[in-house]
Image (tube, rainbow, N blue to C red; front, side, top):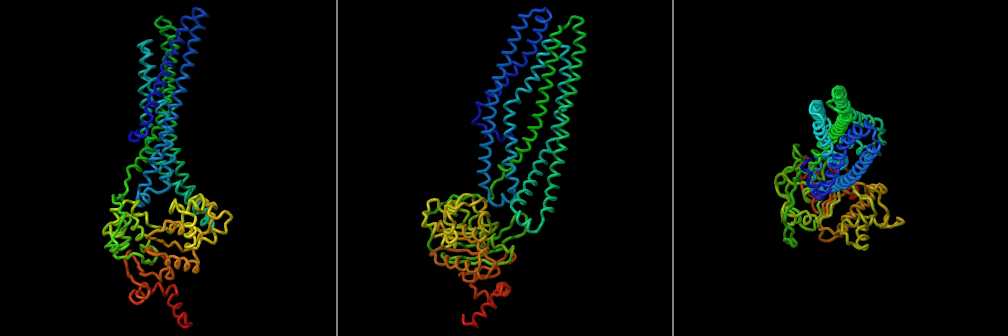
Length: 581
């Protein structure tokens, strides 16, 4: 947790003022029992009403001053804790955005959401308690012990016997609680994961009538979290009663031995009352400390999870070069003996080599899991090759800054993702300064203009979160249009036309062929989508099994021929020839 103190550097003044105000309040609180004893011994016992009233007014004044100092501390704690949380969230969000896909895959979206919300909220609470109570509570305990010594040294031995016992209980509970709190946060990640999966895949769950099964899985995870919470709650629940028993036993001892001392004239009645008040203050302070132990135990567990994110470094480190001119003879993309694998698993790509001249259209086809998406993800450096080189415009992608590498790329991922806002705001991601004419041109090429123009608000039509108010095909066409708005030199379509009908898909590919000087990668499992490409790459089991035109691969690549047969391409071609088509 101490590693996160850098987010408090702008609140140093508040971190000083708050505890000082609380310390002043604690001093006033420690003086109250002495004033009470004075009122009893010199006012009540001597029946001096004016003395009682004057010192009573002094107590009211001290209480009012204490309230004022407490309010200043409270405001300081609120400003500092909320500011700390805000800065920490911003820094964590920025850091997450620097991580590559590999680290995001490892940490997981639900876990990151929990860390940015629940864990940081716990740290905010800890900062507030740090300012308000961390200094006050121990000071009250120490101050009460000192004040007890000034009243009667022998009676203070009761205080010194009770305080270590209470401290021992606090340590034992904290020692047992910390592992459980860490475990609770991990199980909260699981609950978040299941919740996210259920909400995002609700239609599929309903389609397969799996609501009850899903509910049972969630219930099991939720009950697991509840059991851990109950277990740690039982341990934490011991704090207050055990400390209360020790403190009450000490008060009984004070009253017992104090009465004896009063009888023999060693103590006055008011001093015994003061000693009881000081023991009560220690009890209340220890209860506060016990609650602080729970809060800071959770905070340390949360801080460890937050620091784990900050300690995670991107495996893909940004280069430093931002070239403005390229070798005109250099190929648009080149792979040289590239190997890649996810984590500790086997190779997802194995010894891949090919060259793509500028302005060519490249089709990539293969079975599920053959490495098609993995291959194109290496071009914009979403991942880095384990061995070999990936070159764009003749330069190794590792040497580019991310901005320079991706500024002339248009990437359309497998899953069509739209942000809440309007169609216009989504398209402007491609180019924030694009005019309406450019947006219209991109929509037309993506075969999306007709349905957008038919909407009442056109480009300003609302896009709900995730684009859920559009069909799958409409979302795919809008994401393609978004990529085309920036007029990319390199366009990657990662199976991004899978929801389109054959006619729309053909019209889209025809429109793309009209765009000059643009290198296009088309990933698809449909032969019809790639057969007219200048070159087709055939992948299977992480290896490049063949490359060439449709006609060449039919002759030379058995795998490609099998794919064509399975999709009825050869039969359709034969039928077309018979009919003179």
